[in-house]
Image 1 (tube, one colour):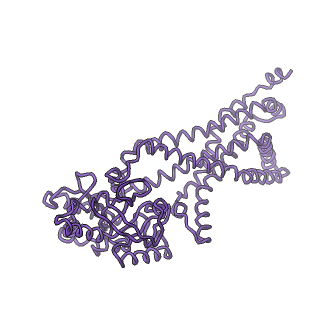
Image 2 (cartoon, helix red, strand yellow; image 1 turned 60 degrees about the vertical axis):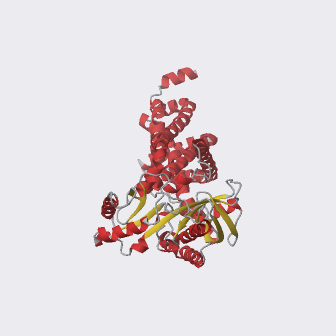
Image 3 (cartoon, one colour; image 1 turned 135 degrees about the vertical axis):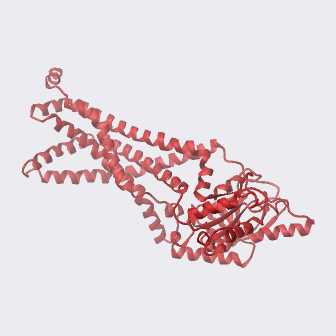
Length: 499
């Protein structure tokens, strides 16, 4: 759904989503993420302990090698022995770090996706024209033609699209109900009124609806559905989630009573579906000329224009060659004599930024409060666990000093324990976030199914490096104080207490 399309929520359609409802959704998402993280952490415990056992065997094999390798391998053997001393505590610490890293990585990918949408891209620019002062944006149907004229007449050739018609798209939003008398969440829907050719021209690339992102096979299926839409004006494509909500399927016919276009009745036949989990999974797409035909029919019946006949264009999208092209066109569109009413031209990323403006404090809080807090909690978890272990081995460390162990060796043992837990917790967690969606998507594809969320989920590959590094860093920081206290253990005081 486009950012501007949300303007129509509450305009006689479905109720506006309240902050309380958004907070509930966020809590549910976090609880869901937490549950998935805990499940994956428990499942990966055998991998964690198996990896520790393999490392221990490797160091054990090096015990008889010349010093310093042999000496260090024996010291490493003590580290693994200490980790096995209390398996439950080690397992719980690993699970806690795994889950916290999982949530941290999930939030990182989420914020990265949002920031990428808001970031200006080099090269071709998708720009959006909207009404400058009215909310929601509503413009006369003549404005798209005027914009095309400005592009052809005012812009130099190098700043014009190679074929303006193939790089041009209009949007009209239709909100309706299946029941003329009663409006409920289950019988209402949101439709985009578009030109089918614009979709074939990949004007919905920002929604990953292009040959590159969808692949040859799925793109061919989409083109086939678009061709069906072209055959008859009343043919429509609905999202799978929307069809599930209203109880419809491909092939069904239904009537839709206009809410933001009152007194208009549409007769639709579903000829295709947008995949569940996609950005259009809860919406639908109809032909713009069908909306025009219905308004013409209204004029014949009533003898007057429909109230929205002169305000039926909500957005105009144009793909321009460069950022400079956008700046030049924005200057021309901004002239007082360009359009009868003021309009504005902004890039897709700027429109996303405007839409997310009310949520900027939440996003700032996630980035600068929640995520750092998770890192601090991870350090505390390690610190508390290692402190408990050190307290239990206080006398043992005094004996180690008597046997000739140096303070730095005792410190390195304790820090190594924390680093190993942090390393595997961070590594296996980030591997799960990065590879699990790929695996699920592959399995679905092999079984002939599709789960759009996993098909479209993309993790930043840098997490494969920074996840383990974060775990190691958290281990070092968390174990710093308890290891420092352990190196200062006084043999005389410990044995005096024992005596």
